[in-house]
Image (cartoon, rainbow, N blue to C red; front, side, top):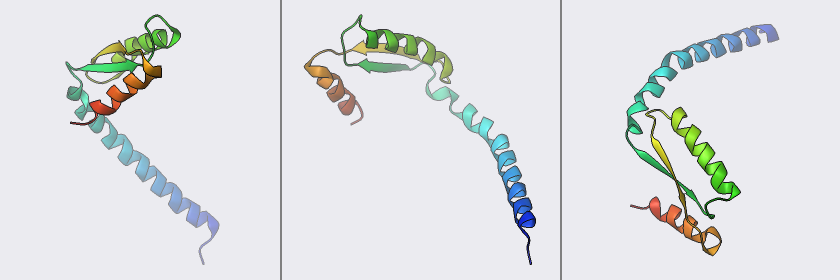
Length: 98
C-alpha cells in the first residue's frame, strides 16, 4: 500500500523534471523570436486627443516598451480623435483583417 509521502515524493520528482525541461528550452524559444520585430514599427492607437492624460501615459509606455521587446522595434503613438474613440476602434478592427 502506498503512503502519502510516496505519492508526494513522486510528484516532487515530476515537478523537478518539468522545471529542468523548461529551463533548458525556454531560452531557445526567446532567442528565436528576436528577429521578428527587428527593424519594424509598432503602432499604438490612442482614441483620444494629444496632450491629455491617456496620450501622456501611452507615450511613456511606448518609450519604455520598445526597450523590452526583442528586436527593439520603433513604437509610434497614433492619436485618433472623434466619435468617442469609435474611429480608433474601427481602425483597430480593420487592421487585423487582410
